[in-house]
Image (cartoon, rainbow, N blue to C red; front, side, top):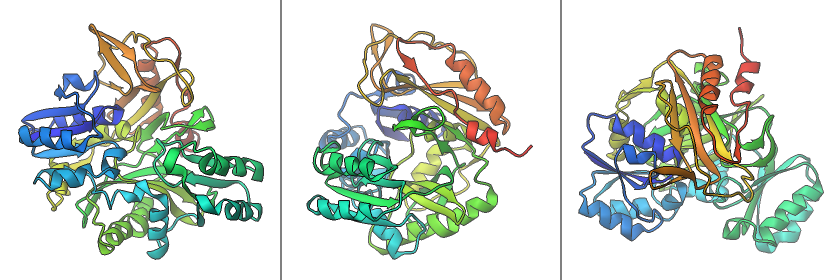
Length: 428
């Protein structure tokens, strides 16, 4: 089978690596890829946001499955364009991708179909004064979300009215998130442990992968600004078999059914960002693709044929036995550039990438290659991931940081507490 993976980050490196292990694979292309994916297939220097370029390439190369990594090509209709030419796609069409691309769409869907989530109110740019009036009568902390896609940074937790007003001002008056902030969702602040659950679906049936926990904040102890994610681990002990069944019964199945019933049949990975509250699991957000960096922790824990799973879902009849959890554990730590998620420098040479340890995977996220040397080229640069055969997060954390200690670039920054929430709450 000839396969194209669309994207250039750590998530796409993880997808390409898992797909490359399938006996079904004949040839793998990564568009545009990165120095890490170069070892797994052919990197193709095309713009992932140019639908016409991608479609032409896939037709010419007789691609049998396109796997779309990032959200932007999906919300831009890449899956629609490919399917119109008879190419199978793992990823939702433009209408279904609104579940991430328009938070107000997702919240209304959950409201209409009684899917548990935080109470909310939606305001548009011309309702600026109404939004402020609503905030004055609200309980704090409160959450303000830009309605559109903001690279994981359009969510602000405000502890008081002044902070909330500043967040609304950023969206409506300062255009800090561009058109993504022309509408905002203001919702109640939920407390509990967070969890990320991936449901692989053909639009009717689904398979859930091991639950992970992401670490969004830049600083240890979940402090500082929100980022695209500073690390993740899997499986999370906060989602046991009983909890997973509740998540499936109250969130995953009802959402897949609701999307189909409203004419938005969803094919691909439904990312469920959850808060495990005292009242039960509730949806924080849905994403229309695999999470980053959770994917880098979850995929190494799968045994079986991952490509078969994706292809069967894209073909309309998911093969639920294609993969299973292998019983292991994984911790992924993001090595970022100093200053991220604000301004940061690029072009710092990376040393120590030649790690020969079967329990360590180094995924490239924001790197570039020049004359055989690897340099930083993004805010999140590398994802150092441990893979332990047993479900032992203590060992997995130790191994991940052991691998990280061998890497260096000027200004390297990473959190030292990835997986600590699980370790502090574990039952001995």
